[in-house]
Length: 372
Image (tube, rainbow, N blue to C red; front, top):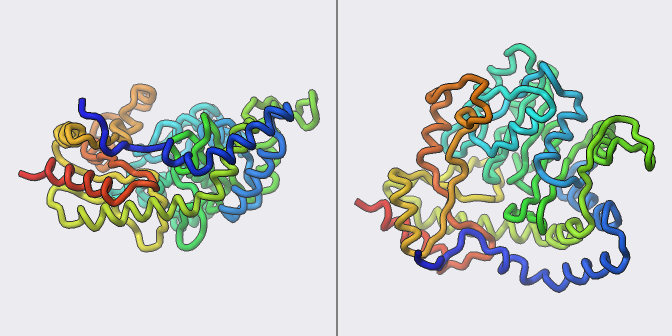
């Protein structure tokens, strides 16, 4: 196999400028012996809330538990149904299932893969629906206003899955505060990545924030006195310290991602056989991924690999066709847009430090791959 000339992601390059600062903070933590829920977690929570214009940010162990804690905090459980798009990572639905509720699947829109707003609003009239999860897929904000308005009319919860959309903006408003709450992921490859796992909840609801903090720390109102049955979802100080360093650089990194996306568009915009992602005029995306659509995807991927260009698939199997959700009874063809996209989508290398030369190598290899 050809060694990658252009990697899919280059975390070593991304972390090089902050290495000394991070190691210094880690040394301080090691010397202090305070490893859990200390000053670094508190500082990161303040900064993350400020960045997303929310009153609260609760740092937790990972992105999946962030969503799960939101649903638990809202009292969602057995017998309830929550609307979720099938074109997303399984955690969006998994968090619903883990509290005993049932995902109610809807299709995605072409162009972005985000939730089909019309289908989501129509599904709100189904029995036992208590909420909806717009996913800001690939860092592209979902169209929130019509979803939020329709949900408000029916007193439904709107929970943003912002796992891939740190600091993205919708109509000049930050994601994370557009519904009752939002869940974020800090998996290492995310735009704001941890040294391992991490997640956060953002909300402007004081009572919900208090409940989530309680649930995330064994239900303890005070040490060894648990008011409710909770779990252990605390963030480690070592994780928070690194995230806090990276948080200061996130706006610059987001601009870097938009630069890469713009260059891809200029090189690939007129190429027959390559469909570029739609960017709505009201959106300021952060391009966690740059996902195109092509025919003969495996052949294209093989050609890219031969040219030393890495690529990925996000995601090849829509949720309704996952064996984990076979009990819901959906057959192939139930959600045609998501299924058509799943067969054609291809993720190109995307990281803020990509050079113009690297972007051009990717574009040239892709053009060769789709040429007759």
